[in-house]
Length: 382
Ligand SMILES: Cc1cc2nc3c(=O)[nH]c(=O)nc-3n(C[C@H](O)[C@H](O)[C@H](O)COP(=O)(O)OP(=O)(O)OC[C@H]3O[C@@H](n4cnc5c(N)ncnc54)[C@H](O)[C@@H]3O)c2cc1C
Image (cartoon, helix red, strand yellow):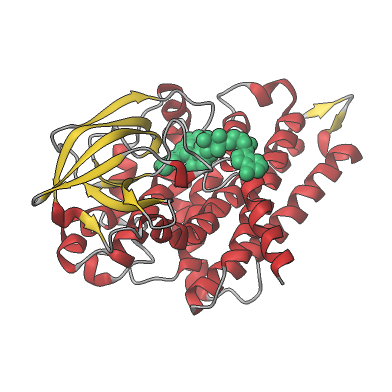
């Protein structure tokens, strides 16, 4: 661990590790098999103050730092990345509501998701617009005192559960002078007429994190459910997404550390050719690589989170940390399976489940290709 972490960071890590080992690990395999959203764990995460940790106490948050929240997600993902993602995706919505919501919106929509009574979703991606988010087609039309929304979203985390809501969606509200789409963000509460949750997607990773399609068919919401300024939707999302990248990086770090811990334990107990696996240098080197990558990833992520806490620019660090950590997590998950041999591909082994989880991390919150584009664009602009 970095030597400069405080006692508070250590205490948070110990508390989350206890929770993850005692309350999540015993049910993790069942959640994966059944693709079941863990209602009890979500509620407990709220009670323990994890869901809203870096948000203002005035809205039910914990008033903590982003660095502490990174540690929370890292420790949760070390045991179960899908559970960690529920907190991560919830935080993406919370970031938008906290930064751009008015007082009434914050009390009504932000407070319940920070306290773990509800779980929030962010609805940006559409069947024909993922990386190219400016190409969304969902439309919102102002009709007197209401917005009428038509369109569809897909891959939406935290949708389709009994505690889902609200969802913040991006929709086209007009055309700019330069011909580009004007995009705005809207808060759509669960249960709104014309808003339905579609198919639940069957995934190779993040299986206990519910991911669904959303449909909007003449969905009518009050004009006051516009989030912030009309036409600022994409700008709002892109401003908050760097924080999301640090948090996805934290999930990757959890997988890296979990792969290392499980591989080391397995190598100590398993024998081949009359020797413990720990005696084979080819496997020792895999551990050395995992530990080195985990250390580097941790420094990158904690630095980006500390920059976020200090209020200085951190977008470039966030992209680099997300890119590095998630790709190293994928490698570590791959090597952990190799170390476990045949057992490594059996879903009752956490290393098997972590493999699918790690793959998702290279795609969400901007794919690896998009991170490289962002990093190189800034380099070349200097
Ligand atoms: C499990 C899961 C949960 C998710 N949760 C959410 C959520 O809660 N809310 C939400 O809004 N979205 C969510 N997403 C969607 C996610 O953000 C998108 O999948 C992601 O942005 C990539 O978009 P895409 O899938 O359309 O791929 P595409 O954009 O179609 O990309 C396909 C490939 O082309 C590459 N590519 C695209 N453009 C370029 C380029 N210019 N240069 C080089 N390569 C390029 C990509 O890197 C990728 O390799 C989730 C996705 C998954 C899998």
